[in-house]
Length: 374
Image 1: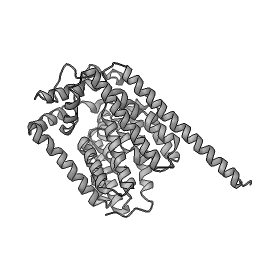
Image 2: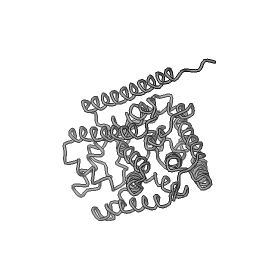
Image 3: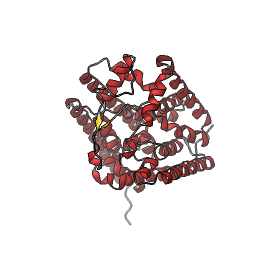
Image 4: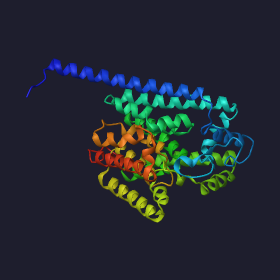
């Protein structure tokens, strides 16, 4: 058996660093090309829905009603028929942002929103590269060129902001700035309420002060729209949630919608509750560190909540890439890297399995020595 000399090992490490840097370059260059293509394309995506919602809020109308600019979803690619109105389902705390940008024309709104999303992704991944020296090239490619990021940019969704907030939470926790981390987590949960399981798991895992601070931020965030719009705004929001049809779409990879699509809704409820309970018990016993607990909490929110598009996986991006990937993590990442109809087969079973593998990855990570928690 030949043992590499010190000089050869240095050369190997330098070569690996160069390959990694090339991978970073490919990721950022490809992402920039995508953003430019999106800016030069005049298709509506979800932009019209957000613009109309913000405009309605400005005029004192119902931001969750149907308007001429509301985007319609064509579900024919999923074997469904008819056009379905894609209402704004975001909670009222997001309305001030939509309201501010709705003063722009729709075309300018699309450009501004796309650039804002691009900046959030770019800065977020930049923070990871600077502060996570062992970040692999394939991880950077997955973050910027995987379907969660590309679909978010192309369709004009709000998930770039949530990725950035979760990355800030990771960054501030790494730097020991727990108040700032709580602010980022609390805002993320306020914007995407299904992430409340993230707070629950953090609390159970022993990060109680952080979880309580984050919950306080979320509560304050939910009080703000009451002051601006009055209590009616929450009735309007809950009404549109009640009539939501998105459970039918295979890219909704939560367990309850998945089992509902195959005619076993009650089974889905039991499975979702069982998995959430099992994760909670595991975290109570193992006391995982912040990264593993966050990964488990966000996985629980995705799998056990009422709605989770495949793009939601980007919410745990910073935690998922915080350690070098082995075979399991790499295989789990593939369905979210390469978009395509094969992943939609079996009512989206591939996405459910891949998310389950990521959950398993964090379960394994949680067996490592935990950080001091409190």
